[in-house]
Image (tube, rainbow, N blue to C red):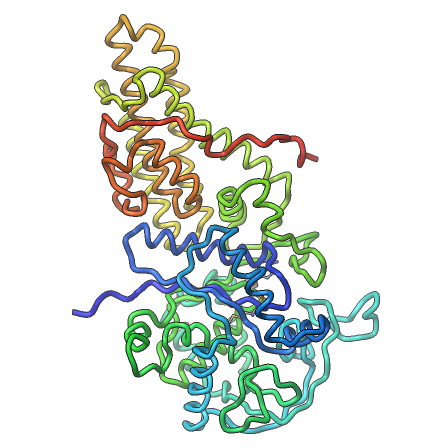
Length: 538
Ligand code: MSP
C-alpha cells in the first residue's frame, strides 16, 4: 500500500538583497500556521522556505557593498534570513538556498532535459526590464516617473526606472501552454485562489502568452546554462525550481526518489500577489513541459501597506519583525497578522491597532481567562480540577459552542481563512468568559464551605471553564505555540492527555476530555500587560 502524500507547503524564496521586513514575515507565518494546523490534524507535512540568491538585484547590492555576491548572500542568510525564522517561531522542515549544489545541479539537469526535448530555443529579445521585479515588463504596464525619475518610464510596483535590455538568449516556449493551462484551471477551480487571483491569471493567459527569455549573457551571477556556459539561467526560472529541487527533483537514488514521490507537487504555494503570474503561469508551464504534476493550489495573499503602498525596504517603509516582536512577543505577532488581515486582501499594520488588540483580545480576553481559572482552582480546590457534578443547560451550551468552534475553525483553514479560523475560535473564548461572568464562581464560593450545592456549582463552573481552555489550547496552538504550550502545562493536561502536539484538531471539540483530578498550576501570565498601554495610542 502506498503511503498518503505528504502535505507540502511552500513560501516564496526570498531575495537576499536585504534583510526581512514584516511583509516577508507575513507569508512565512501564514505558511507556518498552515503547517502546524495540518500537523495538529495528524498529517504528514513538509514546510519549505529559503532564499533566492542569484540575479542582478542581489549582484548589484553585493557590488554596492564591495563584496562578492556569494559572500553577500552568505552574510544575509546567516545574519538575517535564518535568524528571523527563530524570531517568528517558525518550524520549517527545510531551508533551501539557490546557491546550494543540490539546487544548481538539479536545475541544470532539468534545463538540459527541456532543451533536449525541444522546449528551449535561441532567440533575441529587447524590452524594458525591472531589476526590482527581475522581469521584462510590458510597455503598457509602465508608469511615468515622478520626482528624481521624472521623464522616465517606471515599474508600477517599484516606482523605479526600467532599463532597456537587448540580448541574444535562450527562450522557453511558454506560448505553447496557454490552452493546456486554461484547461487545467477550468478543471481545477481551486488551483488559484482567491477568486480575484484566479481571474487575473485566466485573463492574462487568455490575452496570449509570449515565449520567455530564460537566460542572461550580460552578467554571470547565476547557474550556468549547461550547453552554453556564456549564459546564466534567468533568476526566476532558477528560483521556481526550488520547489522541486528541494525535495529531490530528478533523483534516481534514494532517499531523493522517495522524497520526491511522496512530497511533490506542492499542496499550497503561498505567494504575494505581485508574484502570482510566475507561480500560476510560468511554473506550471515548466512542469507541463517536463511532464511533471502541477501544484494543487497557488494562493496569492495581499500586501502589507504603508501609506497605501506596498511596504518595502527600497521605499524605506520596511519594518523589521523584531521591532514588533521585541515588544509584543512572537505569539502576538503571529496572532495579529493572521487575525487582523483577511488572507488574500491587502491590509495595514498600525502600532495602535496591534496594541489595542493585544490588550483587549490577548491580555484581557484569553490571558485573563486562563489566569482566573487556574487561580480559582488553586484557591478553592488546591489546584485539583474538580468534577463537574452539577452540569446543566449552561454547560451543555458551552460544549456546543466548543464543538462548533472546532469544526468551523477547521473548515476555515481548509479555505486558507486564518482570520476566519481565529474568529471561530474566539467565539469560544468569549463564551467561556461570558459563562464565568454569569456563573460568578468567586461569589458562589463564599458559601461553599457550608453549602454543598454552592461547592458543586463552583466545581462545575471551574471544570467547564478549564475544559474550554483545553480546547482553546489545541485550536490556538498552530497560531500561538508558546502561549498554548504554557496553557497546556498550566492545565496539567500533559499528564492525562499526553503532549499538546498529539492532540487532534478533529477530536478536540469533544467535551469532557480533561479529566477531573488534573493538577492546575498558576503559571506566568500568558500575555503580560503592556507596561505602557498608552504608548501606541494616538
Ligand atoms: N525571490 C522572489 C520569489 C521567488 S519564489 C520562487 C521574490 N522575493 S521577495 O523577497 O521580493 O518577495 C518574497 C515574498 O514577500 C513575495 O511573496 C512578496 O509578495 C512578499 N512581500 C514582499 N513585500 C510584501 C508586503 N509589503 N506585503 C506582503 N507581502 C510582501 O519575490
